[in-house]
Length: 514
Image (cartoon, rainbow, N blue to C red; front, side, top):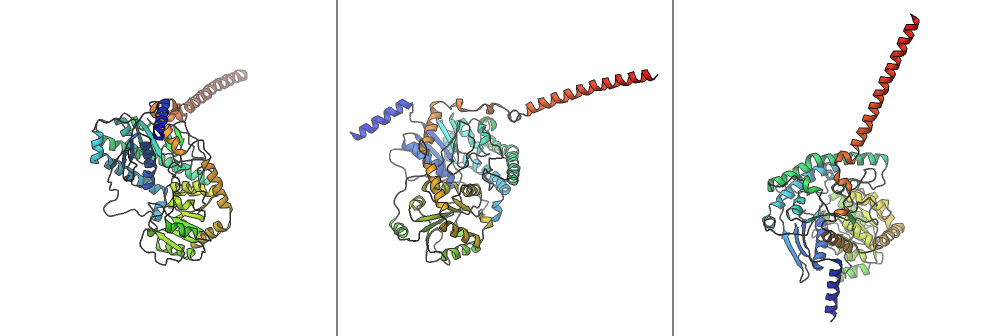
């Protein structure tokens, strides 16, 4: 009887809202766990709610509930030249301009390989139709072709806050005076010199996209689909952007109606810790520090000098440390340090004995810390980590030590400051209250807007008029040109009038003289 009631309620709600089972294609082949995680949690939840999901991804979901329609199309990508691997701890990766060139290369290689995966080609040639294509918006703009090919609503998922990669695609106003570039280390509250640097990098990035990256992505489309239209015909046809942001952990930024902040939708309710970890944390009378550099960065690859500095500092502490360490042994491991290649991060963050989280500043980890009210020491290395760390420090729940500026004394001082000063914990708890104080859960909001776009056939009424303007019209160059032309014309006419008056006056004076 209870099951019948639940089914009846679901059926009634579905009829009332006009929501039927939709066919959703997810495109998340970038070989980064954080990018895949964002798409996978959304699409898996949509499958649980009765939608038919197909996921193109570098990773594969193997833990699916029964009776859901979720099809994996796994892609194998070769992103490195030969055996050469990118070392993200390399100091050179801290340079935003060098990262841009690297992303140009990676984006071209990833998109072209994905289009040529046999399973992907088979899907493209299958004649299937989808109601929506949800894709990762990150160095993969040629994937906009998927939405056109399948006659589907085009939905973007931005794994960071509103940024210059996505803002122009939906006409979102984003002046570089307050919108910090993702690859730089600024919050929205910038000094003059920071605004100068931010504007210079914004101009460089936009020129790079328009003059190099977009043409290269257009070549990828033309190479794989000779009859396709130019990239620009697909690029700006976006119905919705789901943004991994929220005012509790990001600076508030302007958003056009098609952009929705759903930051935190990946956070799942905390489960039980394994018995050994539960005992370890319960018995930690002085508290516990959790240390993890995320999924892409490996602690085992830390430079030896920095690793030894961290160990010396840890050995002086009375608190216990959980360190995500990807090797079998750690030379010089202190007695108060427990190692594991993997930890249940959210369950650890939820434990009352956790004092702080030492992190690389990845956005997913930052969001989880805010969710549970845990202060941070951030050691950002590359990408948006520097922006996330700067923003967290500006909001008072973190201490930011850029990895390129790491010093043992500075690290030790930051640990002591955070363990002794309660303001960081208080600020983290305040941010957690803001995070939870929402009209609906971020996952529910994300799914609502996806279904809304499908119900309203692309929700064209949410698109701003700026998308109908060319770039020079948008920044009013035509209006400025008109005013300049009028001013020049007026000045010219005045010059002619004064010239004639002066000439007439001169003739009058001469005639009187004679």
